[in-house]
Length: 234
Length: 241
Image (cartoon, rainbow over all chains, first blue to last red; front, side, top):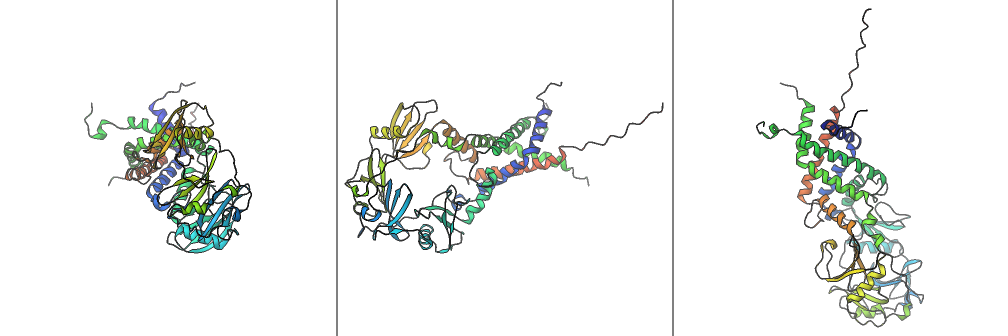
């Protein structure tokens, strides 16, 4: 058997065969990385949560005390806040978070109109269309449950996702984010959900790519002659 | 005119582009490999903490949050929080946050060192030996741009596990350990923002990434000639006997 020799020829072979196998993904990583560096992160927006518009001050006159609105049963969480033009209690118990009007004490279901009102507050634009989604999408990630999708009238194609129980703003996504997300999908190689970058496929390809790049750096030292830099031969 | 020797053009292009961006490409693949190989939940230190103990309170025992809000000019939200073993109201207002006793509405002072230590110990899952409890007013590198102050509670261990506690609310703000810190350096090298470690649009990164696109594309082009077709061997002549 021939002894394996770590010669110039060996590293050239490694570089070209690994390049043949994972080269396409390396090109995709380079292009998607360059695109994400080019797309303005401010326009793309955060991965989760709304852009903070300074919330309105609470009007504290004429509010019921909590027990007279949300009932006497113990709570794990409670807040008084402004939401969709109303002053509400958000009470968290074993069955999740529910809303109550802090003035009348009536329970509030987050219907299409109320979801649109919350979205308008968050996005600072009027709502165009509202629909209920049964389950999570790539745009609502990491939220997996149901949500209201409220499409806004603005020049950014903004959609606001609202939790149908708590009225919480799950995410705000615009066209800049959607374009960015295509490149993120390609970069993370999670073609279904765009959220997991620790899956076996990417680990294997990234490991192979290490051989490609490190053999390439080693070959750099072997590929140039003094003549390449206009220096006389030694 | 001499015909253009495309393999030579591609090879020269690849070689010279690689000379310029090759080392950075290697840095991207090494840091990228770390980021995909070590699970992000581990990086985030999810294993370092347990969820807070479940607790509930009867609404009738609480000071009405509307009355609490009325004492703070411009209050925008009042939220019930668990501070240590007590319930409290967190009031958010343009002038800053305040924490008030849940039952009486009286203002509460920020946590002292002992309470911060207890808050960290209540959540920490590892070896409960505390090395140091420090009050920080300036934001350390590992908390990014978040404004202080903080309680920094460092635990014993080779990976220097550290929990950060909000002095006002007692909430766990962040958990840090060696794997997170290595990731952060890797991230800095990956996005080439050596100062803030956060600007993914910096000119250096933009230039280097598009340079890398050219370098790897020229490499892909070079593959066209990297695997020469085997010449069909002529059948051996049968020599006359």
